[in-house]
Length: 477
Ligand SMILES: C[S@@+](CC[C@H](N)C(=O)[O-])C[C@H]1O[C@@H](n2cnc3c(N)ncnc32)[C@H](O)[C@@H]1O
Image (cartoon, rainbow, N blue to C red; front, side, top):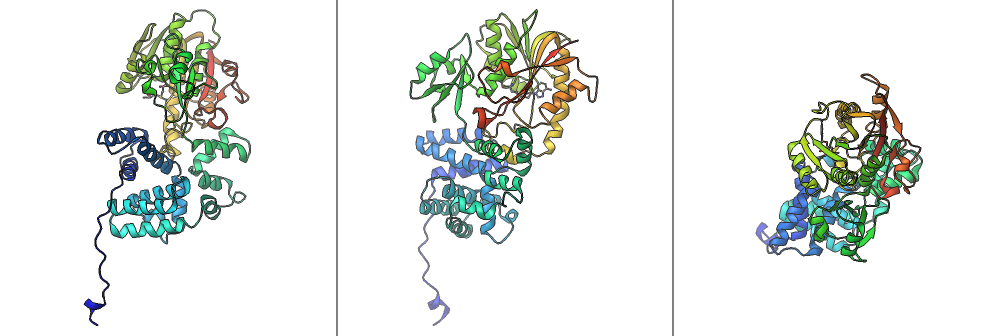
């Protein structure tokens, strides 16, 4: 027999079939990886385009969203599982191949998609976007992954809790180890609490609306949503929770800016500042870090109800424009300015109430930004530190004696929260601030588990909110 005769007849070449849902999810994952894009910004235009082309219905859009968000959130766990199934270091696997693999692992271990469908859809995607050779590699890896369920894999790939608690939690709950440490330091307590927090970070947050007082009411929003699609907020008197899959834009009040989308934690922070006890004049309010304007819109509505005016300041001009948009139609006086809060254009002692919702690592909003945990580095905190201190110091100078400053972050990291406030009060790196703590806890009535005070830390697993921090300070001299 010659070579020609020995060779098996070649299979007829079949062109790979492009599955639009998985292809779109892959495109989004690549954009997040290659261009440092944000999933919540990349995905909506891709979905819109697919819908316009007639490729997608609501179920397709929901599946694509789940594949992108689920893969990004659980990437740490999935990478550990893939690493156990290959015989070379994970860093030697090309990023596009790893994206297809992680998305395949998500379908196998994190969804109800049947095993054969998860493997064959992933291999088909690999044929389209990676080529035949790599598709075989994807097939081999996913077949190994499919041999066990998630719990089985976690037992194999996560170090035992007793040997290394933080590494164990990092792999099981898919967070970088340094983030696990930082969150645990801030939360305190034992294993159950931190596990609940890390798991809450992996869940999709509810969509919460704010009825801006004087412009809309929770009753209006609940009536418009109907019993099936709306629930009252848990803690904020202005909040309404939407049922899963609800689209805020269908509500007239949202389209008109009388209501908006806002986490309840942010609502609580703005309301606590607005309701902090104050003697004397109460007519000049400042939001010193206002972009994109969520808290400013609530503050402006509350200020209007009290005859006060809000100045909303933001350093970035394009974000100041977003603030303009958020405040449009506010019934009371307000002004939006582009200004640097560390070199403020206003005179000392001008304001009665100031909110400084400072730039931060965002470690309290990991539910919303699935890629953020992998992108942040511990060094980032050092970058924010001088800015956070500078903004708080200037706020304490800009408020009148007896006035109130709210220092807020959407991070629970101690280096961005209490340490900043204590440094500024004690005068580390400058003169001690003439200010005293106000207990913020009574200003969030009905909200449990607010800690020992005087500052407040909210938590996703305890309050269903982002992990917002608020310190309230009164200028004393
Ligand atoms: C955490 S965000 C504020 C979120 C906002 N309060 C809201 O609820 O929509 C911080 C904002 O501060 C702005 N910022 C950063 N440095 C600033 C500075 N030196 N002065 C004023 N704003 C600044 C950022 O551009 C960003 O828009």
